[in-house]
Image (tube, rainbow, N blue to C red):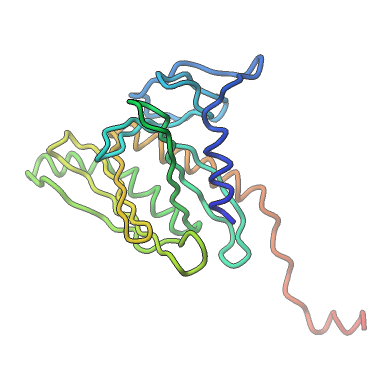
Length: 216
């Protein structure tokens, strides 16, 4: 269900026709703040929906951007879908990737990203080249057939950058973020999560046996 939604998101994140009057600006890859009012930004690869954080797909070296949304799941409640959009570039087709998390996992994910500047400082002061914080197994793409895990890594050798490693179906993917981009990704994800929670209907109250007798 949620991955079907991701395919829809991936198809519209690269905007081909821009709505008149929509708020936009050129992307500043060093900006740490997230602006939910921005509807799209202009990048060297075209217009990207929302106000994304910029990243590097490690291995290919291609530039990518973030997009966050939520989707309800009847068994797990609201899910955060933290998506990576890789535009077509260097003669290669574009692609995408998604990391789905429950609300609790998403809150942990955000907290780890937000610690990146402090951890980078501690790593530099103590000459720690590499360390990681696991988020653990998260939601599989389709039922229990696949499992995801995300690992947060801060590397002092690359000036405190952040690497998110995601294993899907046994295949690892890794994405590199600057410290500011990591903060922006956290803010973008938190905005999507809070918005989704605010729009989620409250669960109906449990049946009250005494009150139920009145309506038999």
